[in-house]
Image 1 (tube, rainbow, N blue to C red):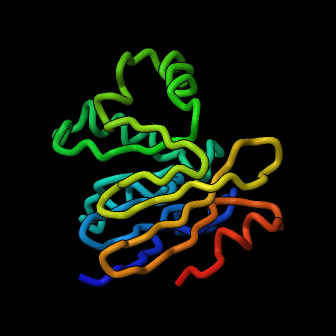
Image 2: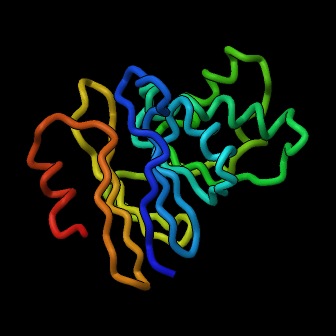
Length: 178
C-alpha cells in the first residue's frame, strides 16, 4: 500500500465556512491523524475513516478541540469503546488532561477514549505503522512541535508543523522530506 496524505481540515484559528480546522490523516499500513481541530471528528465519521493513532502538536484549540467530543463519543455513544486510538501528546500533557477532566467532572474520560501516550522532544516513537520524530518549534510562549513522519517500509518522509514562527528549526524539520 502506498502512503497517502488526506486533508480532513485546514482552516486557520477561526473556522472557514463549511470547513474543519487542523486535521491531516496519513494513511499507510495504519492511519495516523496529525492534530484534531474542531470539525475533524465529524468529517472522519461522515467519511467512515478509521484512525489508529493521533498526534497533537500543541494545545491551541484549533489543533486539539475535537478531542473532547471524541472522548464523549467513546464514553456515551452507541459505539462507545469500539475503538481506542493511541493519543500522542506533548510532554507534561497528563497533568493538562487532569485539569481538563476537572472542568467536566467525568473521571477517566480520556483513558476510556484513548490509549494515552506522551512523546519527548527529538525522541522518535512508533504510531500506526509510522515512525514519528517530534521537534520543538517556536509558537508564542507555548510548547509546540512539528513532526517528521517516516514510513520506513517505503522510505517516505512527511514534515508537518501545526504552527510555527519563521525559524531555522522549521527549515530543518522539512529538510529532505518528500
